[in-house]
Image 1 (tube, rainbow, N blue to C red):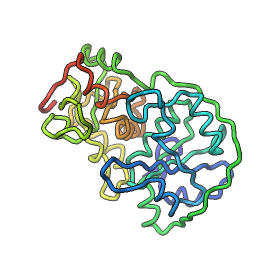
Image 2: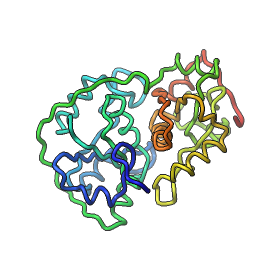
Image 3: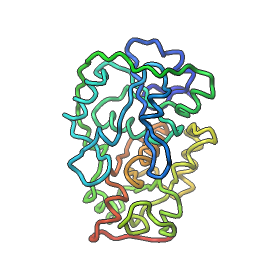
Length: 284
């Protein structure tokens, strides 16, 4: 792969830049309920040297009933300052699953107006498999101011997605597994209807990844979107269960050079419980 400090970098790139004074590394691991994994405990036991732990559930809008919604810019700025992450830093985000929740934090930084942020391709598993060092010590934190410039065009709410679904001017792409998209498989959260947003296409995020959880090449990911019937000439709204894996689709689109994308933050957790919006079932 070709390293791009604004989208995706390899473990070798990160190892070569590990001592850079303006590099900040974030462990953004999170796991679904029932996975029997504790992200914070795993970070405390071993992490990439200098990494800070980014708690996706806490650094969110806790006023919302929906899980880990994007935080207000003021809260994001405050939390990043406390973590010693600020203006002028090159940020690299990774997770313990390979490539799962790190893309969500990449999107959050983009939403707050920061472009010098990349996901670590293959995450912590590949970092360890490649023989790179780990540590269990907390990093030394020095305050650093972060300026947030909220990018409204990178996020969509239920009203905007409903309009896109009706008009068809914007393509909606759902990252959930095919069974959940079709409505065959039950939703992991209680009280949600089964199915998908009318007019959406399905690109399961796992199809964009290799066996080692690195992302496939831009040419291969483009072919996957094409095969799913996604019109790449249109703006795209990405969606999933709760706005996490939708960011993997956004990352893939950005690498492909498709920059007319946004993320539906509430995703199916919101759409599936809204009684006034329609639900489609079956294949797209």
